[in-house]
Length: 117
Image (cartoon, rainbow, N blue to C red; front, side, top):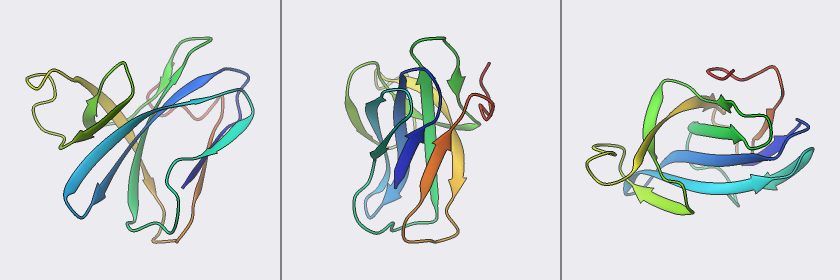
């Protein structure tokens, strides 16, 4: 799973997915403008992955309607329930359907902010 930041801004990326133990969210990957990074190494184990991204330079976000837990600092969080009660933030992630491909690249652009500004 790779993500490419095709914008002219620095962005922060959080990733949500299901593994053998259940839901997990991880972050932050900090990508420079026009840079790519591998978020998950190896073959993908599922079909659906979830992304939440923040534009550090111009503000705004890429978000969606799938709510999962995040926090300001680097994190790995198990479970998507009771985020606030557990001391985390609750962020809306957008869904990525990989069609069960074994590898996938997501491109963030200025115009594809599903829930952003």
